[in-house]
Image (cartoon, rainbow, N blue to C red; front, side, top):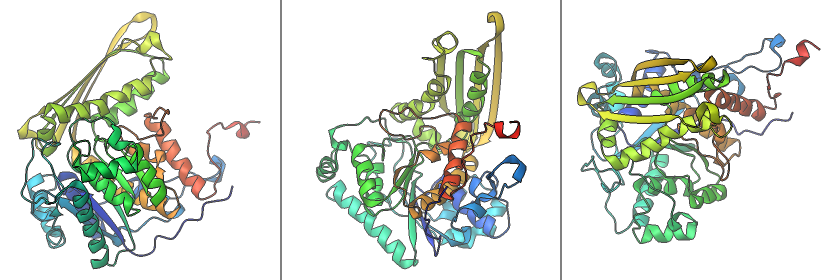
Length: 436
């Protein structure tokens, strides 16, 4: 196979983060700590992962960083927007994710990163409000202000390339409308302050218009609309999303494929979450919860494929609950009860209690997504990057195509994409050549 011509990762990469809360500050602090040798990059595929090349007998499994040209962590420069004006050190203290002694070692660097005023409208995130907000006559003007921020950031820090990741809160549930059907409609909607254009779409439009790769780490309807997908094709912006696959859904995409592989029936799957961070406060609003619920509940339908196995999964009772409980902070607890059916109809149960740190699980995904999207841009790839589905609860996909949710198929897709980029043989795991 012939590989793709990938431009080198030369110079500095600006990572634009929308929302400098728990996830973003944990990402930034983590990168700074890894740079200083204070911590290993656990959970990051780009930093620790390997990819097998060739046959098993060849023994070639280099690190991903030795296979494709990724930006070095030393070349990353962070900037972003938030409705609160505190610097990243103060924001990280507020979030309460990272140990205080570690934060003190990173304090000088974190204090240098201050948020720019954000595009924000409480109609879309009802449980939050803050003073650091942009003003303008319409959403088109606000988008132009975001573009001005981007250009200034690039010039001030002598950046060679940029990537944007939405790490803001979950917006209220929305569906596609005429405003999203074409760029002509979309830009008219921006000028008319159409409520069909939430804040996240303003950022996505600004990034994509500038040709910047864009990822959506929340379940919002954002870049996954015809107008912005078409714009990405014209400007060469790679797109990824949506909703980072961190705690409970990560476990579902590990367990559910195994149950289906053994053709064990599932009568019910009850999931509840307890969390007390800003995300939990936002999701305490029913309209924001609806957006998250749609993201979390679709996973099992696609993995278990009840249309193919009606006797096993057609009557599955799938319930998802999210409970805001302030004492927990960022320490999230995901509890699952799974009612199984085995041979001869015998009933069984599986119970999972995952006590996790939401932002600790999310941070390496933000890093990997940024680095892989930058790689995609340098490889001339644009539009939806389905090979990055590995990282998301609701992977964006082409129209009339169902999304792949099985974590192991997603990882195979990701690694085969890396092989494809370098002209290496794709691995099917057939293995007949070892025995014929």
